[in-house]
Image (cartoon, rainbow, N blue to C red; front, side, top):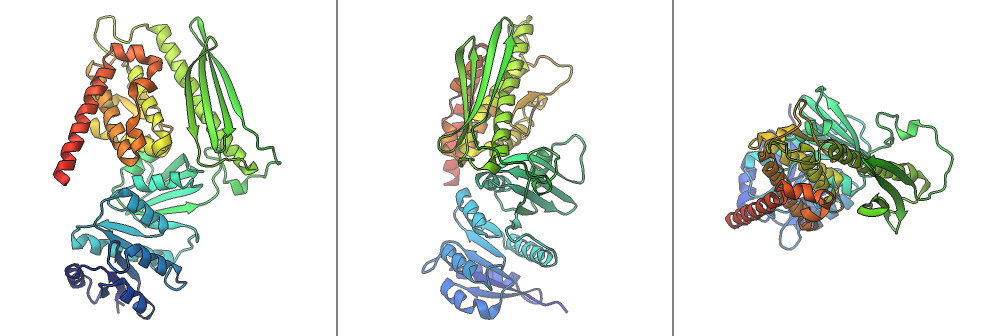
Length: 465
């Protein structure tokens, strides 16, 4: 005999309560509907619900207050909780999920969608009841905003642990070290495919965010299994490299400082004159002894990335002084890849590195459907854009406009996440190759693309409102 699942729904919309009552009915469900959160609180312990659904915006007592009271109860705190809201705000979704809600549904919605979310959440609760789960794990179903807000939550929260996503027949995971993505994997295996791309291709599922030890070395053992090093002083670290660019010498120096938060600064100098300065800051000081490996990892990554970029630039200039072919047709692809990379990197302080990489990849995949030339590029896990088309050293002139569209859409969507990203100036951040980019018309193409993107955004907003 099937036992009906007891569901409590709190919403001041009486018509919605009646509609949901028709769909969540015996023998599968036993719905207890309340239009006032205060009445629901008085009955919760007697009902003993298996799931709670609650609107965020209500008179007398709003959903957040109701949620906070429920989570303070030792008996009710572990009950799955789904929020409903008529406000389309990603910050609100992140706040709800971060506070411990299991799912979030924006109004208006088809009732059938709510019923499926209820079933999926209850199934997951049953699964968790039969398996050992870390008490500090956060889990739930992927909401309408997709995976990006969850990955941003991992990065913003400086997660050291694993983000796992499960769907029928597929499991994907990413490991973070203090909010920095270090590796990924999953099943079934797909040779040649990046784990992040495979996870982003999943349209939904159930996620877990779990704190756990993560080793600094890719593929290494967990930190708990490694022998403890002897204590070392928590002092800033640094790297210094010299790259020969033809007849000129380029110096690259990277240092970590506590001021008061941990900041990695790389200075690129040519013949003793500084030509570029790159800084990335963390929201924490990283001054503890156990933070030293994390700090060193960030310094090494930034230093190696900049050194590789300088070497690529030196190699290109040594072999070819002009970015256009001798016949006047075809553009050097690496200059476009370099420009997109540096624009993406400037968004890190605003939206985080992981979010920046995800946005670059998503937009690349979307635009490549109309701009076939973009399929010759790929975005690495550390955010570098590379040209990846064996046998081709030149691309048609249309590649300039395609790359400009990529940059413009990226800045627009990054600006929707954090307004500071929209104020990135492309000419300024790419001035190291400003002459080359101006000669191929990249800046003019970016200006035009930014104008089209802004116009499209205003038109879309007018339609929505």
